[in-house]
Picture 1 (cartoon, helix red, strand yellow):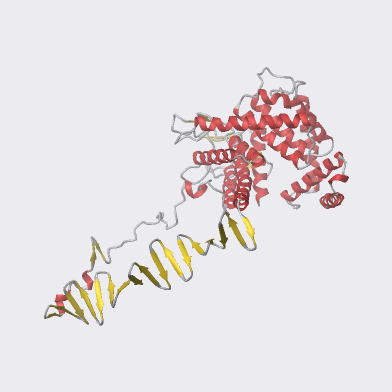
Picture 2 (picture 1 turned 90 degrees about the vertical axis):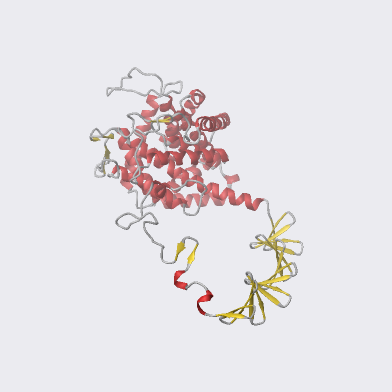
Length: 514
């Protein structure tokens, strides 16, 4: 019912036109559109009314905590005891970036008092954006700037002019910074933003691709795709499942090895987030590429005109000639290089070529043979029927050459071919599954990109349910809890907030693609 009311209000407001709406009306219109999009994205059957009420109640609690934990200067305090007393700490720049992103997303998506609280928090935190110097914190800020600017452009939020200009500045600055970091540290075997892959690695390609959706900078798209492809390469094992980079020793550019243990659920969530973002970025890149191709063309009737050429279907028209691939069509003739094709004949100089034969005057040439009437001429021999004539002699029978059963072509003898193990088959006859089968290439977007990303996204979820190195589940779907990590001895049985949220968010991302 609420979804229907929102859609009706949106339709009514659209009929009025933007010039008849007050600023606050446009914001409310944006809110309705965002809520409608969120509800459609999840599916009406995915979220019950009581679940929606509970989520809104929790959102109020979380926003109240974020407001309480933020200093007046915009920085967040990160470590608290159970009695809410502050523990000794240094400012966490990663925490600052994550918090800015979370509250900005809440500003765009929530409604009511929680939305206003999020706005106040974000505007207070904006001055800290230029002081964050950790790579992941900067990635979160870059993605936040793109997220807020896009929401403002679409009428979902109202950004003050000074805030909008500061967001544009930081977006441009951080986009250049992260692209430069990727270029500086990458070589043929290492394609990453820093000399080590540590924790929350998926945030970096995710942020690049999220920024690209707003800026449309080709280098940002390429960096996001290449870094994501490298992360998948590092995280995919030969057996076919995904393995988070272990916190024990990480993965460094000079070690040539990937730490196996102390695998964290957070890594699967961030990888899933990057995969979902890559699918969105691919759709935009594909659309932009199509628009650029059409942009340089003129449409004349059903023809496309590019410069002095007309494109009719797959053909190009230059003057009175038609160009089909490498061929030119002049009237009924086709010109291929120095040859002219008339019907089924090719004209090469004074010769006509029909199929495998050449016609020179009254003679036909087939390979090295000349056909004169009913005779074939091979060098000094004439072949008449089954006989060969050498001078006045006729050669009949075994003099005609080798038997067909002894046929050889070089070192190959007919019947020598053996199928063997061609095709990469296993002993059980099934095709082998390799790492390239699982993640393939994340190059140019194609029509099957979405199914490719969906398959990888579900591999992230399956890690929680036992598709991992120990073949044991680390999450409990009954109560939504998740173990803190995977060690050589089994799951870490402590179930912390980060692990649990990582599991639930990965599950939500996968359900959203169904």
